[in-house]
Image (cartoon, rainbow, N blue to C red; front, side):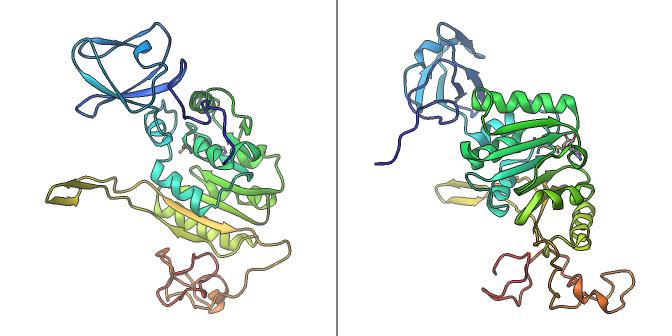
Length: 322
Ligand SMILES: C[S@@+](CC[C@H](N)C(=O)[O-])C[C@H]1O[C@@H](n2cnc3c(N)ncnc32)[C@H](O)[C@@H]1O
């Protein structure tokens, strides 16, 4: 029998309680998120319903408003909360947050640094992943955004999270941590932080940058290569296509989110180690003045795809196995 955890905002299971957030979904799929309070009413566009009809009952119930509208009741998932929460800065979307957790290898107990905290969406995902035995230190240079992030994180977890520290300041000036396992950067100019990141990470640690444009991606990748403290970076993006599945009409949805951002990961080398020679010469014209020495700095495979001729077990540093 596995250990049981007290239900609470950080372990959202069990019957619905006073103070819990729930989302009410009407038959048209419209969602309203409310915080349950004993004795309160929630007014919809047709009639109202009593919070007491929900408190003490399980998730997944249907409650009917006085106007005859049926609402499905669930606690919001983190992905629901992240896309609906109040924003200062643009948030990391769940599809990318999931990739960051997997590809930046955020594990329970990890010591993680993040910048900028923005609206706190990624902070929530990272806190979930590091758990109560890990640490997340988030830096945000704008005080107003830091306040939004703090409110969102505390709302999601039902109060201050014991593993979270939020600092107002620019990461490159304010960082105090050393021996960090992972650094996650979501900001305009991550290349400005590479010195600070290199000093903070343990050998074998990993930096992950999330950027919106190809020019930023290029600058981060080249900055990591030039820095000397990192193994070959891996750059990629993900696309999620939802499907319409109804009877014989089974096809991709007509609409999708075409672009959010690019992700770059790189591992921290041990001190004094220089990256091994790359096996492939850069494509002609990949760098402005090709001297032949670039063999050590890149392979011209700027598409971020692992090279086609790399077979499992032989992957290049920075690329996952094919
Ligand atoms: C796109 S937002 C981050 C959104 C956040 N990841 C989320 O999911 O809510 C980028 C944030 O980085 C902050 N920022 C930019 N450069 C920074 C730096 N060097 N140190 C700390 N914060 C920085 C900006 O003020 C902005 O709030």
